[in-house]
Image (tube, rainbow, N blue to C red; front, side):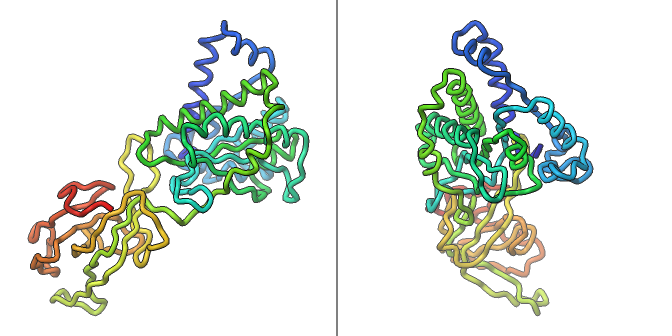
Length: 351
């Protein structure tokens, strides 16, 4: 549906492969005899080609559940009406910097048992899904302790998950975030374990024994507390607005916060400057003490919205900041580019 959110798709393909290869096993036979699995592994192939959220009409399919202007939305609505599933799993990726409750821990996985109206009317299926989500939570919590959140439950009247629940298919939303220092395959594994655990507990009836309070006590998602990179106390060299290139520069001491953009795994993600100033309320997944350095933009001024391409100069250096090609005329002590140190790694101390 959102083709820049692919993590769980790999888990679903892995799950199908495991089930197919183990059809002679008792646990698979129980699943096969207890339920029918119907899966739409990719709803938006055009979006997948470009790794974008929307389809080729420019529509967000997940906001087209009522108007049904896109062929993808029409198909999904028809499949739900034809199949009339008892349970729906809605699989997405969330912002990698989403945090768990009032902590600075990334929400690697977030769950939501989706209501079908703004009044949050419950049902037998909704309550069953709380127990199922408790089962999924307990299955993966030991692998990623403290990194599981609960997605916001605001009703979105045009979204498919909310409307599936309204139409009689109670939905469990699984949002995959990120986990610094771990590969994407760890997150695929967490999706696999969670979904497989849900199927097992449905097949053997053990879902009835799980306590819905476990789900209800999962901390809510939060945001605004993390950035990918924070450079603390940097002396930012900026040309004055009325400068004419003849040495009219200011030095501003501030923190610089940079965030990695989402890209396909095989592409390098650019990092963008999102905040400059006092970032004492923000934690960097990677933090550096830039207090001993002058910093300047490599290709652009160091401003919010520009690339985090940064030149670092030790403060005992004499540098003509008006030089036409600063990097060539005055080689920096360290260069941060595309989310890594391409020169002078270790020169700027990591906090």
